[in-house]
Length: 215
Image 1 (cartoon, one colour):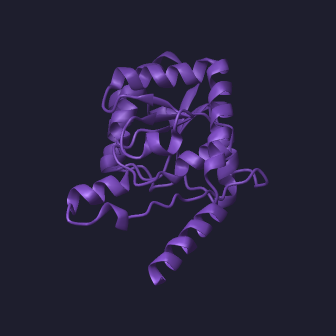
Image 2: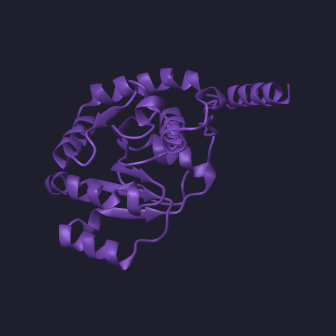
């Protein structure tokens, strides 16, 4: 997807001069447990929450789901502590008791993904989206917006919602949260999709490009 953006912005650059190398992932099952008491049932959001990350839209979309199921929580990993504006939003939506923010160490990430019912990435733009592979490697099903690089990276291994369609997002999350068969299916698809990515492959393809440039 980044390649297409470059071509659109700089149309005078030859397409043959641009090579795409996918990243790998570095998350593994042998990790320590998080220093936090996790909810029994939670939806996972990872990373920064401002602007194009679409966090406010995500919360507004799932607030009806949280109202119906008080045992369901949203765990926000990474980013900063909740801002006053965010806290006001939580209160306005009446979901303030179902939101948790946690700054995790790298060694805790596998468990946080693995114990989630679903990982949701509602971002409007990502050049790659490393958390998508991290979730799949942690056997966590994924719901993504059908925007940017997501379909390219996740292929058919994610459940997609139409960007900025709050009803569709709530529907897709609800399906993944409450349908165990769907979760199992997408965990399996995610594991298969991971075969396309590795740091060794990233290294090999990068070296190939450098050698080609030198020649």
